[in-house]
Length: 390
Length: 160
Image (cartoon, each protein chain N blue to C red):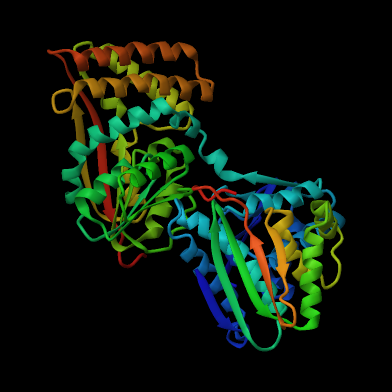
């Protein structure tokens, strides 16, 4: 019964007991240490006791019935205490199972934690967004494929693409780098459906897509040679949680590769002042929504902070002279809508959006102008996981 | 897909249940859109069924497990040697599963668990919570019976 149990009772109003791994005991007596820890926590807890099961992959009914008995015990011994089961939508059996307990006991609630972790997700998965995202992926790939070699990607590796979105990157990787195994993980069902459809339509093999939570991956420790996370850390308000997972699943000696944007350095001439003001407002709006679209230059700092070595940095410059300007302009046009949705979700001042629209429309004009020059900079960074960690 | 093993080999180690459930689930899920998610869910169902037979079988004989696909459903047929006592257990399980208000029955048992009912609850949960259907087939004159567990429809995302 390889279960890991952690107890954290430091909070004032919310204390937490975490169970991870597999909980399939033969008899209830094998749950004695778990029951004992839960009861100890419940005796000293105040307010709400969180029982965190978001990374408990397997649990049998013997264990479930013991948790049910624990809840019944709390109802009698600590009627003032609330119990919150913290679950993840990634674990497919969990929500239904614990809903029954939540319906039975008034003091019990369930929280699907990853819904709170992905607040911007609905903004990023409608049809229009998907169309432009495909275009964006193609624009970037034309410049990224060469730098990937510098960052250690080569044929025959085990590759994980975390936050894979539409999976376009995986299809390019499969075509040009022939990995031994390739898995793409994302938390968006519509984007994954699209990715699977493409793989199915073109009869592609050796690409596996997985619904997953980047901050609590179900992939094994030390199991990939190359772990990519592109244009995604920047949209999470807790990027270090995801980075921790990227490092965990990467084998020692393997590389973690991240890309992030640098909107404060968007280039456009003429109308450079209006354009810069537009992106400044865009950054302000997105930050209010917990999104940092200027994370690019922080890549080196982030990777070093995660304990990686041999950090490499490259800059991808998508411009109106090295790419199709019409495609680039459409991508920028979509950002206007994305900014508005981020702003609305975060309760940002609507006047900011006027600045965003004005600046980004000016950028589009520059992109489409025969005499203008515009660049969208993206910073790629990678680091090697050391063989020994201190 | 089919698997055959002896009662002796299966019942010697408790861990066989867990390992077998995970292995079979992953194998059956290989061609699904999200194999990992599908296998995690399927393993939960298979494991619970295997645990039930681990605790309720005759001392000797063979266990046959057959997986069939019916649209988006997986149907498990599990044939095992039984004693008269085992036979009564499985008949009772099927009878309870097919009662009109199974969910209320299940909730009542969670509120007031009865002694010695845990194994039965494991099997019944599959029907009460996950809407699996359970039927039984008893060929006359044999000391074996077959359980048929039809799992809920699972979409390409591994969602029930």
